[in-house]
Image (cartoon, rainbow, N blue to C red; front, side):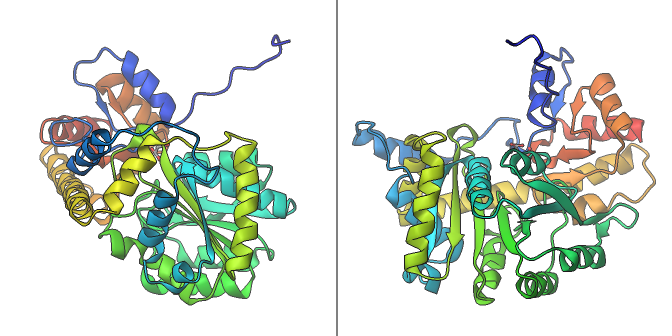
Amino acid sequence: LFSAVELAPRDPILGLNEQFAADTNPNKVNLGVGVYFDENGKLPLLQAVQKAEAALQANPKARGYLPIDGLATYDQGVKELVFGKTSEPVTSGRIATIQAIGGTGGLKVGADFLHNLNPAAKVLISNPSWENHRAIFQKAGFEVGTYAYYDAATRSIDFNGLLADLNAAAAGTVVVLHACCHNPTGYDLNEAQWDQIIAVVKAKSLTPFLDMAYQGFSQGLAEDGAVIGKFIAADLTFLVSTSFSKSFSLYGERVGALSVVTQDKEEAARVLSQLKATIRTNYSNPPTHGAAVVAHVLGNDELRALWEKELGEMRVRIKAMRHKLVEGLKAAGVTQDVSYITTQIGMFSYSGLSKEQMVRLRNEFGVYGTDSGRICVAALNEHNVTYVANSIAKVM
Ligand code: LMR
């Protein structure tokens, strides 16, 4: 039965973790996967999370099945965080939100839902995009193409190319957009550019699917989420997948969500019923713990403020590490302009290094980034940044 099964290629991001774990280099540094590590190289367990867990523990609950769409207080918390508590779509009940298995799960439920709705539609992702975007939408049955995004020659967004590609797309095309902290490039669209994209999306009847996995890692929760308000103001219907993996440092709990903004409450009820049917035939219903923790924090003013403070500290430390990396590269003798490292935003720097250089970094120095040249600057700290800078300088 299985004799013809081919060996699948290693995952371009998570596969690096396996290789990293097996590496015996004592200086090894994992800048592959998008995970934030603190100043001591440790995965943080946020105080807000610890306090929420203590509160939940003080009043332990049995673990029955959650509803198919997840914990109601969590779904409501997501809506209020992503769209604003008093925003019209939230108060009028025209958003269908489901708890998802991480941001990836939100994307997959959304992709399956959209494919059932319109199997002939195409999907466009940015060039380049998160490695998993293409695979998720292809597995859902879509043909996936790209729209122009990054121009390597100028180290900036090819905005004219982007607009041209969206303008050329057929009505109904699903356009996957990174709401903030573009993965992998670290280059975000500015407000005026978003306005133009929204105008094209509207004029051409495209279906926007926003991926917001890094809210809070650019300027702040409200600032990073502002683009969502622009889509609402333009009176568009759209999808948003969100994740608390990074912002709560709850990677392993798989706490994400999918929200579908519809025209009215009755339409939202129909959409929600379809999302639930998609979930039921996939994993039935989501797990309890992570969502309970997040819902507790979002619903408690004191813990919410503590979480925002801790998220702000992560954001500030990443930015400081970008500057340290630039200083380290200069000290190691790099003369070319590396200021792009501090221009880019979020967890990643798109280094411009070739696949060969990235392989050398890994094999000779134990410094792991993706083959595409992406490195996770959120995993740099005072102890490893000089070593990383020196290693990069040697392969440059
Ligand atoms: C990444 O891009 O490294 C993260 O989003 C983690 C993942 O699942 O790939």
